[in-house]
Structure formats: structure tokens, C-alpha cells
Length: 277
Image (cartoon, rainbow, N blue to C red):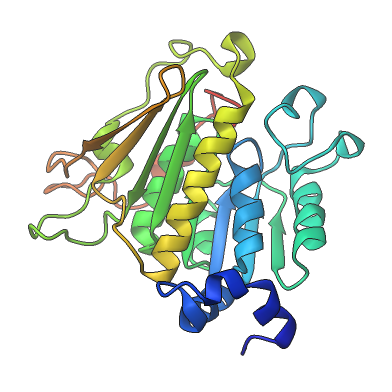
């Protein structure tokens, strides 16, 4: 799977980067990334992963393109309204970079398919819009031992981190998981979704692009991982804040006495939209 002359020309701005170079670009070409959700976060994330030359990109989403989502879901266009998001996104990626293989999964991630799907990829990026999918993705990545780059949106804010809960940090303790930061989902109806409160569309672009950067860093092995840190973006003040997060020994997934040992806890989970990312 050597780089072709056309790929060398396409990626030459990467190839001259000392931190990437030919070896790093080759890693990207051989990599497989699963993106959960082809919405606001998934749109810039997918485009930049494709532009960077990630060899295989999986997209899992069972939703259709909607007109009222186009102010932030920029991988789709007006002519695609009503189409499956996976198909619309795959077409956009093909136009951008024909060297990338797209594997569309026009289905919802469930307890029944999560391990099989996730295990087929090297890393997962979660741009989902509900707590049920976020917890499921986190738990499945833990059991499959796959890094998870997570992002979430609010009306004027965003959040980003990387989960490698199956590995120890420098202190010998495991890295935190999503359950270390959010032990359990809030009760249904207590968090308004963005169809009720709205969202500034460009914020999805900021966070999805940052998510793409972290995925590429993890694949190439460059820079400092976001594992153990949570980035908080306040768009009103144009302020970024880093918060250290730690492993919770009492968490039910990766704690000292885990009670979640498989994905059966998710078998009957019902998605409750937080923000249609």
C-alpha cells in the first residue's frame, strides 16, 4: 500500500512536516477510523479525515438529511435532503478524495452490533447526539480496546477529550472513561435538546475540526494525547479551558469492582437526543 505519485502530490504538505512525513502518511493510509454520527460534528470531522488521507472511514448513522440541520451539517447539501446521511457523506468524501474507502453503516449502533463494528476499526470518533449512544460507544470501545475521541456540543459551547480507559497512564492508574466524568446519564427531560434551545452552527465546525486533529494525532502518534484532559470551549468568550480528569476507582466499567462486564446493560436503552450534532 505504498503512496502513489498522485497521493504524494496530494499530501505533500503533510510529507514535508517532520512530525508526519512519509511514514506518518503511510500510517494514515493504512488506518481505519469509525465515525459515529454524520451530523454537525461528523461533517468537518469526516471531511478532514478524508482530506488527510485516512485509508478507510466507517460512518454509522441511521438518520436522513434534514433541511433544518444544514446550518451545521455541512457535509450534506440541499439536494441531499431526505437521503441517508451515510450515503450523502460517502458521496461528499468521494468527491473530495477518491483514494479513501468509505464503509457506510446505515444503522444505529446497538448492544448487538457495537463490538463487531467497532472491532473492525483502529480508532473511534463519537459525534453522536444522545446519552445512550455515548455510553454504549464508550463501553464498547473499552471492551474492544479501541481509543475513543469524544466531542459534544451545547448552544454556545463544546467539549473534547480522548478516552483510552483500557490503558494505564504514567501514574500506573487507568486513564479515565466517559463514566469517570459522567457516572450516569441525567434523567430524561432534564437536558433540553438543541431543537428546543438552538445551537450556533459554526460551533460544530470548531469542535468537529478539533476532533479530527486529535484522531490524526492518535493515528500518527504525534503530540500530547487528550487522554486524561477535557477541553471546554466557550464560544461567547472565545475561551478554551483544559481540565484534568482522573480515573474513578468506583466507576462501574473500569473501576476496582466493575459491575458492567458486557454490553447487555445497553440492550433496552432508548436514545434521548441532547443536541442533534
